[in-house]
Image 1: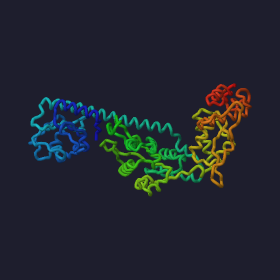
Image 2: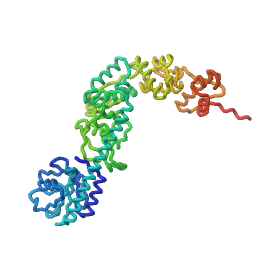
Image 3: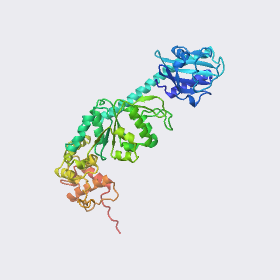
Image 4: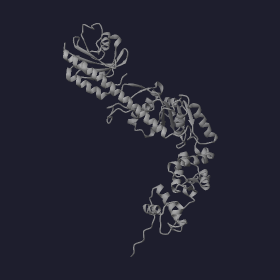
Length: 505
């Protein structure tokens, strides 16, 4: 079915109304060889019963014949007394009313029709018929051109999303780093299911790399050339969830000032990754189930049925099966999503992978921050291996990036890491930190600094302590931190590390 843009269509119908003053003006789209569907109506007789009304051309041969002509046609009661009126299923028009049919044709193809009905006989003059015919020809070209323009815009949006996906994705499987049996088992499952169209549910704690696994599923699939579109379901506002997933038409709700494609449209031909799917609002769960079953959807406020040519990969850190049993998530949707479940192990379950991951992440950090001399000291690596990693791979990456900055892009030592101590093996309570804040004469650590500034300030105080409170010169604090003297002085000033002299009495 050709999409009739609403704004252009409204302009056309208003122009026809100015010419004809008909009691009912409609625009109908040809949705199949023998079926028309009402897409807009205007005039005193326009009613909600006409909305999306479908007209069977098989029961109306005179109307079908009028569609096949290029010029508009006046239909009289005597012409079609043996067949139902065009809108007999929704309106009760008088038998002797006037009816004008103006086909919408472009490039030699009929895409729809405009009909004009008036309660009076002989309501349309020959001049009006000619004018409406000319307007119908112009309208058909305008509607087709805007439809093509919107389709190109949709394709451009899809290509932009695909380009962004490709820019953020390295070589196939490059982010799947690890040699432990539990991790290799998960990777093998990803390799097995990737070439199939099966829906995949990725489970595991926060920070275990579910998005990286989803990208590998996409890259190893037949859809690798298509876009990879990610949506965090926990960030969706309940009243806008359907619009984010399926898009909306202009005017579908307050603030919808233009048509907007949803994630299913943007991911056409590729993969849609639904992260934190357990947080999807109930109404959106029902619609997602319908799309997974029927592979079709409509935009919010629209009537056009679109094909969902998308491979869905979902992820959650919650026990989705348990939530389904308790009625907090649709059980039927859970079974649809969990066609092929893959559990990603926590980092504490694969401690032997910490060195591999650390060096892999450090290479990426060095490239991103232009730190060619960045390296990991043996004492820092031992501390990383001993850590319990409640935040998993994400926490490891954040730790290394912070440490790289504190180390000035050079060798990361244990002192550059801000690791929580492991819990007491007997009580399970956190143990006290071994490190303490250095006491340097003339300097202090201001209270209420944000965590990252407090870590930076502590590192500067430690360097000052080791340098005997000297900033410049050989083995001074600036040299120890690998910073220019002016930069270190500026950081000290911004962090408020110098103690203010007591006022004289």
